Amino acid sequence: MSLQNASIKLTYFIIGGFDTVKRPVAVGVVMLITYLLAVFASLVNIIFIVSDKQLHKPMYLLICNLAVVDILYTSSSTPTMIGVLLAGVNTISYVECLIQMYVYQVGATMEMFSLTIMAFDRLIAIICPLQYHSYLTNIRTLVFTYIVWIVACSFALFPPVTVAPLPHCYSRLRYTFCDYGAVMRTTCVNPEEYFNQVAILSFFVSFFTFTFICLSYCLILFFVKILSNNDKKKMGSTLVSHLICVSCLYCPQFVIVILTRFGVVLTLEERQGLLIGTILGPSLVNPFVYCLRTKEIKSKIFKIFRKINTAD
Image (cartoon, rainbow, N blue to C red; front, side, top):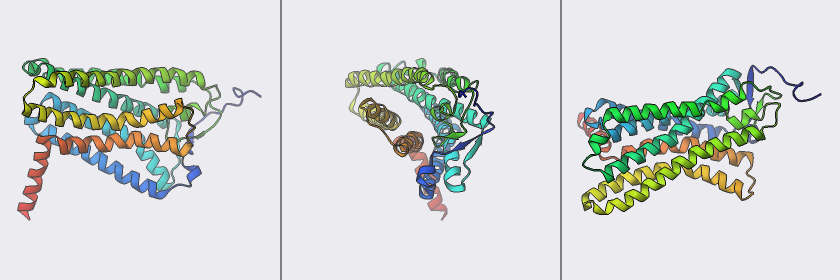
């Protein structure tokens, strides 16, 4: 009997990614704390920027957008993994699984797009400092951000749309949530062709965004010579913040690609660890970096702490 004939009608998936390590509760606790910190820090950034009209500027609107993306990205999969580890809830309905796959893909794509438009913002600020506020107004920044969201949502449709019509032969997922690779391996077809299609799309997005960010840094370093020492210091602080966020997002991805390219076979736990790091790392680091390294947001936090101390 062929696999096509042996297909089953799925109503739910069993998340089996943690089976081999016997549900490490300690990992679940760490993930829960990290997730709560990441969401809290992102919400603080959003509230500060939205509530303070002095921060209604292109750079801060982009930081606010990044905070929204961080919440979406980490919330797309982390609660599912925490539920498996801490509560033993290792099933997810078929429809919820496809929705999770889509939201995760939107979050992952928007992480790259958000950092790219932030690099573009800093590039314009350096190359055209006098015309910066006329070129990048709040309205144009918001419109540009909306367009990027639409493009990301369109790209993210590809994985669930390709998986949905395929017959399924298995109900157990190899990974820790409804990742495209995990769901595709439950189908009755040879997944390699589909993996290649998604790999080409993912490579295009990653290569385009990373290349643009690198070129932006090169141009910024070239033009930064004409700035005053004070402006150089201010711009350097902003670029370091952005570089930290870029490194947290792309480094785990490159580690997986490079190791695979050189024939290093990663165990399931190692691959899952890198995947979890790719999700939780940027979502935790980004808001704290911009809270602590952005002068206006940092001073606002200090004012709140001073008021609390005075009240006591």
